[in-house]
Length: 244
Image 1 (cartoon, rainbow, N blue to C red):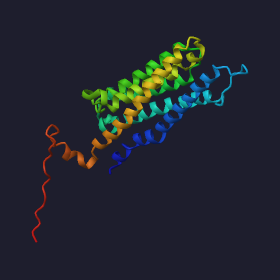
Image 2: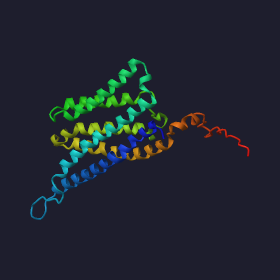
Image 3: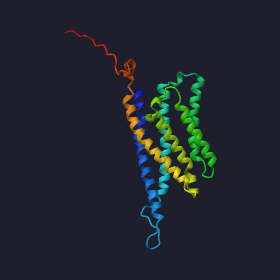
Image 4: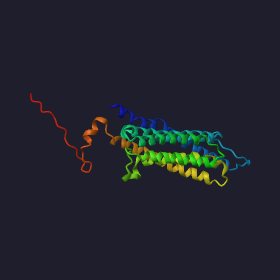
């Protein structure tokens, strides 16, 4: 395994070690938060509202959810960095193109950081930083060398990843509105977006494992480039005839 092949494992390693455990914790806390809210909406025989679920579960859900957004977008950026460095070879690109890509990375990371720092009473800024960060992820993903599998977008690891990253950013941006909105519309939108995100995360697990099987090691690429993928045939490698 070459050095570049080993670095290709950083993205799936971070996803398995950090992102997917955080998804499970966030989903469990979200369920407990909802159950506590439902329990408190009912009155017992003594006219009291009680719940065995601790009151801190809501704050913990918000905290781990904020971490999850950072982890998802961070892992996405790690994957894009790897592709643009080892596949696109950014240093071989024209100066203008390389500079643009580097500036887009910086702007995207800065937009995500500013979204975290925006105050709850600044909805316009939260919407603006979310839009800029999402646009940055999309523009970086549209660069040459990024394997998008556009002809099978409905089973594409890239499209699932970009979509779920944007959903996470949107969920973070709408968080303060959930507590201010008495009609519960923002809460319902938050639940709907994150239910979709969970389904996409499940798809990420499948498509990521599939793509790892399809990515050849560095020493295999020259031979596999000669294969006919339509007929699923490859030229036989010559063997040395060693006579006794």
